[in-house]
Length: 376
Ligand code: ADP
Ligand code: MG
Image (cartoon, rainbow, N blue to C red; front, side):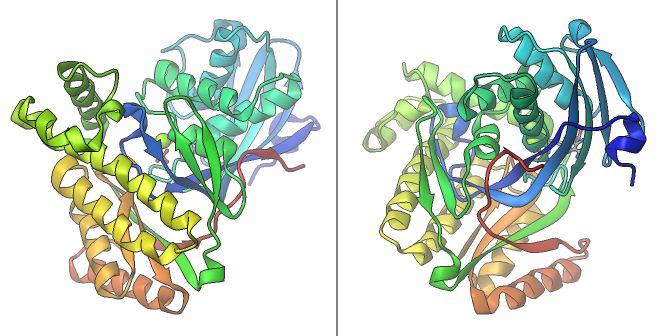
């Protein structure tokens, strides 16, 4: 392992951290202006950094390519950086695009957020850069403002048409709570999630598979939702009241109906989940999670055999509910379990994977952690 000093031969200014996330419920709703309910993970991207006043940006990651990527901040443009370094470079570009006169920096990254596992390692990397830049360049930017800059970075510079959930979760979550977020106006509220107090745990199952079709499919699904909203004369699918869903479906071509049904019912599930959490009934989340998975599997069609098996095996082993989290086509599954059954459920899923001939999943218990911050 190479530390900042040995890579850059200089003394860093500080250390920052930004977490990955799981999303309790509200999947594929963020780009429809809908509701989401993510929780930050204890797993985070850590950046050790110093400011440079010569306009040079140098990037090194323990999880990268073993090279220092050196760029000039005034030469950054979409398409100019490839590979992992595009994510941090994108944030510096987006800050400058937004009119912030920021210069260079040296960055050493080390992240324990599993990459490509649907746990948002990319937003963690973006948000740790955004947070470090805020401090290094004394920018008066709020968490939501930095999240929007990080999202724009991923959309316009990296070229991934993601919504704003991941960046908002990484920037704005607080320890011990889920983030109830309206992705239209970024209004948000921290909803206490005292799992331990109710004898519960969140089990995360990283299936370790990522199906290639995910990349193009995400953009296609997003385009399908936008087309459906347009046909219905709505600004976004979030504006379709649930009681008008049946009539709306009648007016749409058959291939768009399941997409609309998922988005509208998923927004309702987020509101139901928040109501249950506000009432202190965390166990009631279980059936809402499972209903969300059925909708993603049968209507939105973004699950895959591995995530379906993880959900089914977890529920069969006694989980109160389970669902895939993240964009889909692989990635991770989230199961709500009673504390005493955590190991049993994890083992049952591992056995089911082995019986099916799948590689062993990675399992861990998630405790709701804090959002991006300076840590040293
Ligand atoms: P997810 O966000 O679900 O983990 P993505 O495909 O959106 O999956 O982002 C994963 C990509 O982010 C990786 O392929 C890599 O380019 C980049 N990335 C994430 N974390 C790191 C890291 N610590 N070092 C270098 N690159 C990283
Ligand atoms: Mg990502």
